Image 1: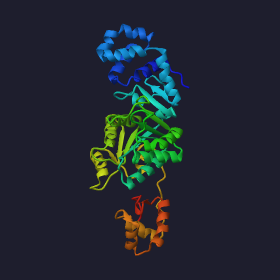
Image 2 (image 1 turned 60 degrees about the vertical axis):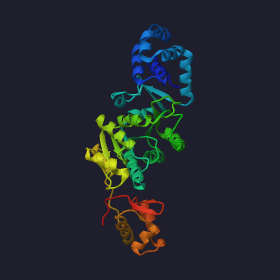
Image 3 (image 1 turned 135 degrees about the vertical axis):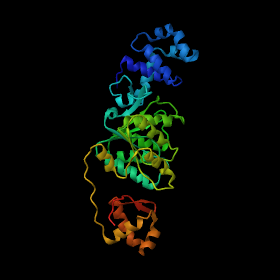
Image 4 (image 1 turned 90 degrees about the vertical axis):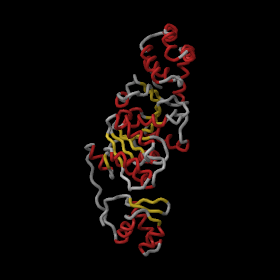
Length: 365
């Protein structure tokens, strides 16, 4: 059970009042911090505090300025196995503290030490192509092997692919939640996030009981960008929430990377726009690892038998249903399905139902 300093308790106390605006919490913190007898201080500053937050909020603050309320807040965190990492805490990351409007408190579950490790964020659209999900998984696996702690959100699609990959490898990962940890959205990811807390870290900037609002999601993305030395945008439409993450990364001077897409793919329009604006075009994890000076052994060209080569060459034109592939190669299903399975294991092709596509673009003709 964590013991908090008076400054930390002051921030936790202020942050518990969801109705207070961020700027008012900061003002009150500067007014209160380091002083004793909280209730007396609020009473003496009645005119000043009312001028900032109004009479209703002043009365709420005054009635809550007591050990009983503070114990209630801390006990609530302890019961949930949450730790409050405040602006005054040793574990609060400098990368986030040095940005505009850093959260007063990060409500964390898991290994808080990850907040100060070498982090890299991978995000993408909820509505992504099967190939985009495969790309997210492959990049996640290689960047984990390269020593990065991955950072992402919680959404279905790319975010979930990143989290699943990290959990499967038992590796370090941070999931940043919009709203409070009691109200995970989407709820379908509750079990996945429980596993993330075991191997990595869950964080939210709002008290645990906070219900996520629409505006929480784009604002949350600033934390993802700030924690990371770089951000990879795997997919995203022109107005996708992932673009907010990219904008924050650029604003904070972080490195930005994006996967290129063919013309006419809605979930790739945002990536192409970012590349036009200067984002680093990447099509292999090694591009990112080498950018950060992490030495890697390039994947060797794999030797393929004749039928495997025919399959690969046929799929280079785009995704193909297995029946269409059989027609193209003049083969029966039972003749090519074993080869397709082998190519999947070699990570050369991916499958979505009965549709297959190429996973790597560096294959010999």
